Length: 106
Image (cartoon, rainbow, N blue to C red; front, side, top):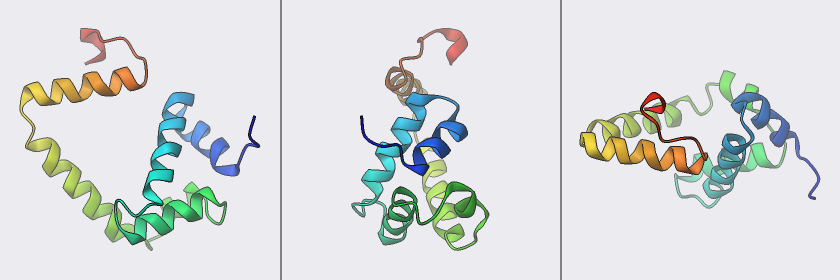
């Protein structure tokens, strides 16, 4: 088993769910490729390499503009989804986390 990195413990504590933590770490690795721009690639590398931590990132204004822009893009994307697409998106998310697809979970 690979040696645990500081980000692994942080993600487990933050997420409260090992599957969510694993998905976030997977996405951090994906961000290092530049898929969301060079700033997020740098941020992800700093977190994964232990040069920064989630608390520092959350309390810093260094990436505030990028986070704000990303949140705005997400809000627009979600607002443009049809009710059926939102339901499907929620179903896919639950499947990724192996959560039950019940009315209570919606």
